[in-house]
Each structure stands twice: as C-alpha cells, then as structure tokens.
Length: 83
Image (cartoon, rainbow, N blue to C red; front, top):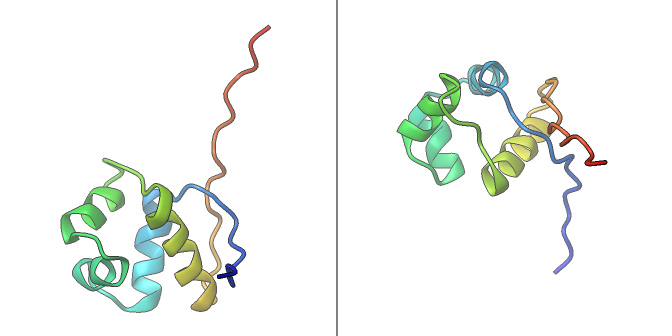
C-alpha cells in the first residue's frame, strides 16, 4: 500500500497544538479521540510537559493539512556534529 500523504516530519510545540485544536473547534478529549490518544496526553502536550512523537506528530500534521491550518511547526533540533 502506497502512502497517499506526504507530510513534513516536524515537531509540534504546545501553542501550535492548542491553536490547531481550537481551529478545529474540538475539546482536548475530542482531539484525543481523533488521534487515538488519551485526553490527558493532549493536555500534557498543550502544557509543554511532553511533545507528540512518531505517529501522533504525523497525524497532527495530516489533520492540520486537511483543515488548511497554517502553522509553523518547530523543526527537529540537529545534534552538533562530533569532531
């Protein structure tokens, strides 16, 4: 099965997650249900306790694209090169 979505792999910050949720008109629980996550997880993302990773980050990007949500996701930090 070929992947039909080409999504930039980026890290989401707490402000963009909350802005996306509000843009969609969803509660934390409703967004969590759409992502297959717990409401507490979305709350932890929005309070910057944790950041979404892996599939959750990808799903947030797909949802944002489908909703035509303009966001500036924080690019992953590059580790300094060792000499």
